[in-house]
Image (cartoon, rainbow, N blue to C red; front, side, top):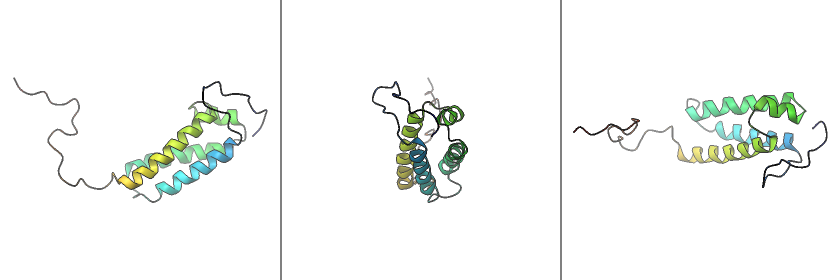
Length: 121
């Protein structure tokens, strides 16, 4: 991490990350390993894997935290860490839920239609 460590994030309840590169690298690795356990054609895996790999590449290419924040463009590095922690939790839940599997029974008519069909008068 280049430069001086900032004193505060300015966000209530969000402390300054002491080792943001290491923390994000570990989280991104765990997310990618979790995604590899899902079928390759699962939409969640494909889209999340692309995003996390892109962010991991940005992290590896930049030692400067400000450059990483600017390229990822999702807030301060501490906010990106929180996002990665939440994504890891979700990825593990998705692995358990298996949303790529077929429904147990057929969905009711118009289940996936929005806005819902209005009844005839």
